[in-house]
Length: 200
DNA sequence: ATGTCGATTTGCT
DNA sequence: GCAAATCGACATA
Image (cartoon, rainbow, N blue to C red; front, side, top):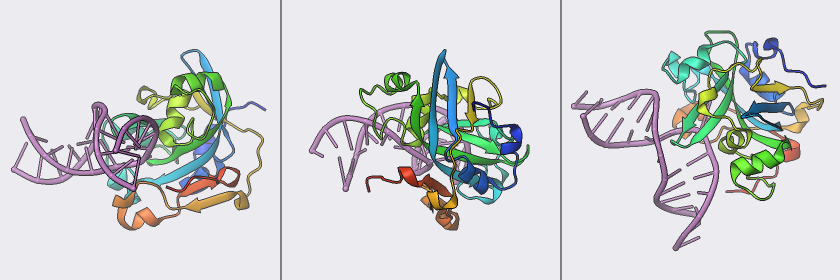
């Protein structure tokens, strides 16, 4: 069962439901001739023009954010704090800048490559347990922003994992305190099987 | 033209 | 626990 999710999966009006459905799916990359993949265990939804936490809030259209206005199933990758590449999936229809941030994956294939990219010796929570490390482990770079997930470099496939609402923990998004009321929205979703996190 | 700060991670105290 | 790393988008002038 190795099949790319079709464009219709991403072309939905409710970015929150897509963020939930992405949990348990397999995110795969074939970059620099290396195949790597992992199961998505944490996501966040960003609801475009009406969401103060979104880069596209109020319809903001720049070189960086224009990718979010592109077709559903496009990769939106941007640089955070000048050094971290964060990977998002554009949803809804073209012109509506909704996106889902992939915050964590559980490594599956190409683990050696991921360890090498992350300069790690052992597999642990820090290998791909945060939004910046997911992109680094999978080899995703800002240069991939605008790339379609229906093509050969980056894609998502069904891993045959059943996820019910009971398996999903919802909570407020991380690092968006500046967004006022919108910072409280429960737009962050975590797969319960991976719910253990050291409190900070 | 200049200054501030972020959808974070890491290493040192 | 705290602060550095590091760059581009945005606000202010």
